[in-house]
Image (cartoon, rainbow, N blue to C red):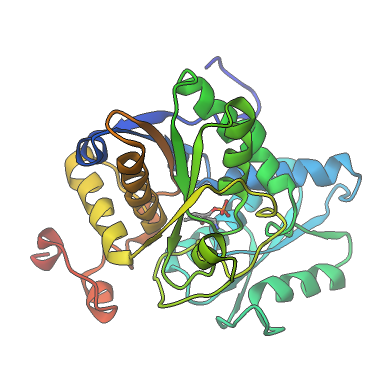
Length: 330
Ligand code: PMP
């Protein structure tokens, strides 16, 4: 890449890496998009930039304006960086159950942070509804609305999917990832199908989400729970509408965590749990597609965002999750 005088041009165009362990385990080739390499260290920088540029093109936001959003954290971090680069303010509403590191990061970036108790979507106090209300009550503000604003998935059609296609030289058999807003899954799915409709698109759903049942049996229904942050959707968001899902997997936290730990110890990657769930899904998809099949997935964010949770012995014990040897001794 040539030098650039535009910091926002650093978003996207992330590296794609072949993962040795998952490839060997599946008998295929697992390729992963390193979204932790974005300036905000997550896949959500792409959606944040796309949403703000869309609002600017539509004349919805004025200089000095405020961007308000409800988020598990990563979209807020992306929006705060984009807003800083463009001269806007940010108000970020987040459930208080999310990692301490994301809250500290948002404060450090200068966002105004509003923490709300975790609540079901049907509750008016849910972080999404709270953020919409704050946007309505704030002068010269827009609501980013990442769940139902399709500028989110457009970033993945024109960006992520096009990059994967190019980086894999058009030789790709399948793609899978989990869904939060569904922007990544639907956007990459639509983008890849546009290139070659035979590319198989799979949902990798955590426990506690309702999409697995929806794509398998047509009914939104959930079971169990997950500690994974940023994923686990209970409804068909506008971003998920028309997503070309061919198959679906339900992945446990234990299975995802095992991959997080293997990728750390064997391949030197420090990741969050949604990345582990995605890799677990990619292994299943490659097995289903047969020996030598080429499957792509997403490494959504950096593990440094979860030092107080996924990488903390006391936290793991409190959640009843296995503690790895090197943390047990620490
Ligand atoms: N992983 C993490 C860590 C996230 O923060 C998000 C975004 N909520 C996702 C995965 C899912 O991305 P999307 O919103 O595009 O479905």
